[in-house]
Length: 369
Image 1 (cartoon, rainbow, N blue to C red):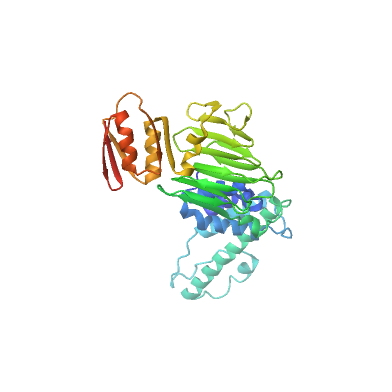
Image 2: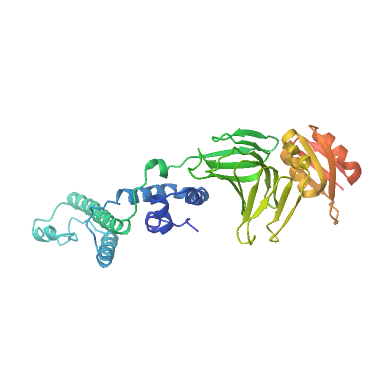
């Protein structure tokens, strides 16, 4: 949806925007917040449109038919489009009447230019009031069966945690669940969650140790997938451009993806699901626990890891930018295990088997093959 050219009226008449204002939920909140973040100049118009929808949703407003409403709107547009020229010598200049009283008083002596300006201003104000009343009647008819939301629903608050490269974060959620957020990752969720579910949105990688709550499933959404649990511990890795990897440590989770999985996939302890979003396929297999969650204990473990993925790990882990020169045409796989080592020691350990040279210049690293 493109809202870059929306006016206040466009927002008011947009069905999805009206539904968001009148009956908000977590999904519509995220949808409209994302649109407005990408179009910050539209916050003011959207806010005004919301006020119009809420204030004019009064059931005691007189109802107008569609034809009456359309006629009044066109008349309003026509009146505002005409320009009034104030000339002292133009004795026959007239203000367009908006009701019968104006016609009855047309024989009154022509007012001064200053008075004409005041009359024109009053005309514009009157037109705005008429248009507002007509909108009130229209929305009274349109939203007759919709309840006016309470402010505490419409103004849902979200928690957001972001870790910069080189930093990891340990979080305790409102339900007691524990989260370790890896470097270069972001976690977003509704504060205190909803009554019937605990829903989180992840970009990057995180380890979850979920508190049991049979009435509120714990759902982690990332890219196009969702992982649902009740009381369990699992790891999710979903960096842009890479596969989505879900690895279950304890308990049980259900993984789903829109338009890919014919049915949901259930994982048992020790099982992992690798989802290739680009090629629309998935692989279920066993995994090495130390390799998957070693990062939570300050361990870097490469086990035949593709070069581009290893570079992403090192950049996030040490907060550097790595440039590759003379990259070989064949696929390069890296292997090695490092416990709380410096970047120099890690590169030194990898270069013997892979045969590359490196230069570390503060936050810039160059690797040459």
